[in-house]
Length: 135
Image 1: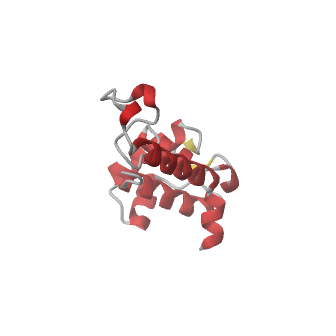
Image 2: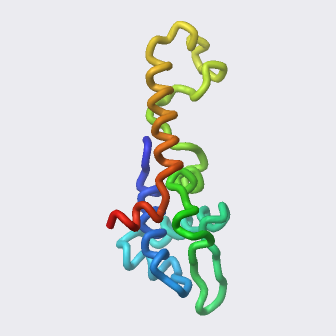
C-alpha cells in the first residue's frame, strides 16, 4: 500500500505541530486529530527516532518539529513510519532482487518500476511546507 493510516496520521500530526511553538503531547494530538493515543504515540516516537520530531520529557513535554517544514520530505515521513519506502506493487525494486528470478522475462516489471521511481521522486520533492502552502 502506498500510504497507510500510519503515514496519513504522521502527516496530519506534522501539520498540527508545524503551527506550534510549544511541545504538544501525544494525548493532546490524539484528541485534536481523533486518533487512538497508543497508535499515535508509536508514530510520534518513530518520527522522533528518525530526526523529524524532537521529543521533550516532563510535565510540559511533547513533540516539536526537528526541522523546518521545507526540509521534511513526505517520502522521509513515510519511510520513518513504515520502516520502508512506499510501494505501488509487490515486486522488488531491482531485477537482481526479484523473488521469482523471472525479472529478465517479465514484461510488467519495467513499466511498474518506472512508475515507482516517479512516485518516489514526487514524494521526495513533496515537502511538509508544500502541503502547508496548499491548505
